[in-house]
Amino acid sequence: MKLIVTGGAGFIGSAFVRLLLAGSEPVRLTVLDTLTYAGNLDNLAPVAADARYRFVQGDIADPAAVNALVEQEQPDAIVHFAAESHVDRSILSPEPVVRTNLFGTFTLLEAARKYGVGRFLHVSTDEVYGSIPEPHEADENYPLVTSSPYSASKAGSDLLALSYHTTYKMAVTVTRASNNYGPYQFPEKLIPLMIANALEGKPLPVYGDGQQVRDWLYVDDHCRAIRAVLERGRPGQVYNIGGSRALPNLEVVERIIAATGRDRSLIQYVKDRPGHDRRYALTSDKITRETGWAPEMEFETGLAATIDWYRQNTAWIERVRSGAYREYYAQNYANR
Ligand code: NAD
Ligand code: DAU
Image: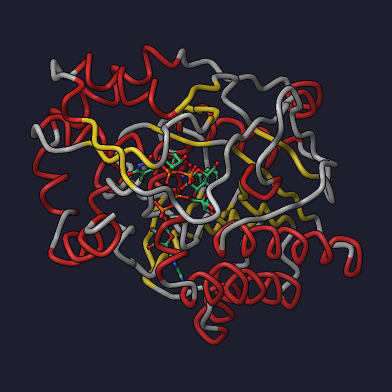
């Protein structure tokens, strides 16, 4: 199996690459990543010497670069993780989000069509279903009702990818996962940001009342699900991937406070995110029924392992929290 993995230097893409290379499977992986603030070759250091892997720096929204790579590689499949993935950044600055998530996905689909790539797996999100009222859970046919430029761009790219199945009969599949957590996650997302701040005794900024609900999925469980869909998913289908562990944000923050030996005085309630979705909830019955996948990591164990990883990798945190990170932090959190 020869794969191009876009966004493979990011949080989930790099976990997928590490998972596929953990055994002795005869795979060939080419990571295509432009290395934005979120892309980091340190995430791929554990596989850097593996002869089955190579890294190509390039922009998925650059048709010349994408066409050249796909023509040269002739991959069996493209597994497409690359995206501008953060909701708050998409609110502050939507342009790169639209460019990468929509035009970048289009560019890859066109290259896959032109060079006859056998499979295209588009990695998407449960955010495309928007806020789900209690007691409902979204299945794959739930309406797409998006709130942020990020979620709208993901919904648009999902529909575009599926149209290549309907129109050009390409073997496209779309996966929609819930909130991921685990090692190597950029400290702009809730869990790594709270862990990094708590370890340093810094304030923990909770948006609004902190009662928004997210369903937490350990990153390796997500990657196993993607591998299952790549191997056994049906073309033209969408597969939800949930962690089966819905928690209000405040409870997640309180667990991090307890595990890092801090107290609640670090919590700082700040102005809510504009258009903030109140509750995400989805059912993963379809992927379980069709591929046998189910999440394995208990949230308590996964969170403890994640906190341990951040404790032991302070140099990684320091490197990714560069000047640009501090600028973003000030822009997003000052006067909030
Ligand atoms: P991330 O921000 O950690 O990584 C994104 C990667 O894409 C980075 O390595 C970045 O350099 C690369 N990239 C960005 N723009 C690019 C471009 N124009 N060309 C080439 N590479 C580019 O993101 P993540 O959290 O690992 O998310 C990966 C995918 O999974 C995204 O498509 C996201 O929408 C989806 N997803 C994420 C979550 C989550 O909780 N993080 C949940 C469900 C789905
Ligand atoms: O649901 C899947 C999605 O999960 C992915 O598609 C996105 O790529 C990923 O970023 C994530 O989106 P969220 O907006 O849910 O994740 P985030 O970590 O930004 O926020 C989680 C919740 O925590 C959300 O309700 C907002 C809240 N929050 C977040 C931050 C960063 C805070 O209260 N304070 C914060 O500082």
